[in-house]
Length: 251
Image (cartoon, rainbow, N blue to C red; front, side, top):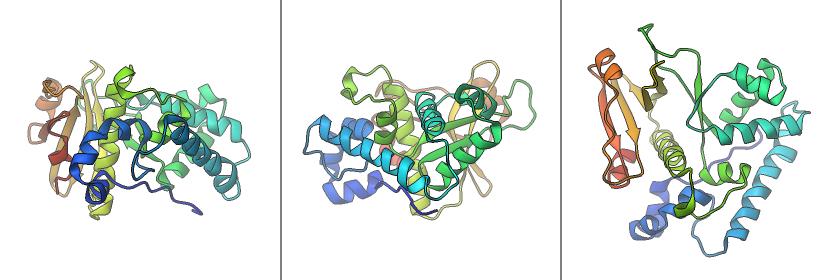
C-alpha cells in the first residue's frame, strides 16, 4: 500500500508524556484518538485535523492506488462501520446497505485492514450448539478517525456511546501492543444465538485468552456461562476502568 495509518500506542504516549498526563487525558484519547501527542487546542482544531486526514486517505492516497472509483459508496461504508463498531455484522448486510456487491465490500474492508485503519474480528466457533458462525466485528484502529466519520466530538462524559468507545479503544490498543511486540496472536470474538458475547479472544500458541470490558470501575463483567461450558480451559479476564493498564501491556 502507498500509505499506512499508524497512530501511537497508549504505551508510547505514556513514555512520552508520563502516566499522570495520559490518565488525566484518557477521556480525550477516547474521543480524539492518538493522532495528537498532547491536547493543547480546542475541539474544532482536532475535528478539522481528523476530517482532513479522512479526506486525504479517501480522495488522494486510496483513490490513486487501489482501483477505487466509487468514493461516495466507500465513504458510506466507512461511516456505516463507524456506527456499527462492536456489533456483529455480515458482509452481505453491509453490501445491501451501501448498494455495493459483496466482493467490492470485502475488498474495501480488506484494504482498510491492510492500511491499518480497521481491525476485523472473525468469530471463534467449533460447531457447537447456538454458536454464531459467519459474522464479523469491526473496530477502528483510532477512536478519533471513528468519531470524525460519525461527526461526533462531544465530550466523553456527555456521550451515549461511552461503552462502545471504551471497547474500541481497548481492543485497538491491545492489537497495537501485540504488533509492536511482534506477537503472533490471532484475534476473534465469540457470540451465541442466545446473545451471550465475548468482546475479544486472543489465541497464541496453545493458550487462549478471552476478555469482556466495562467502563464502570465497580462493574466486574462475568464470563458468559455458555462460553465457559464450551471452552473451560480459556483464561477469562474482565477489564474495566481501573484494571485496563495491566491488560493492555500483558505479554
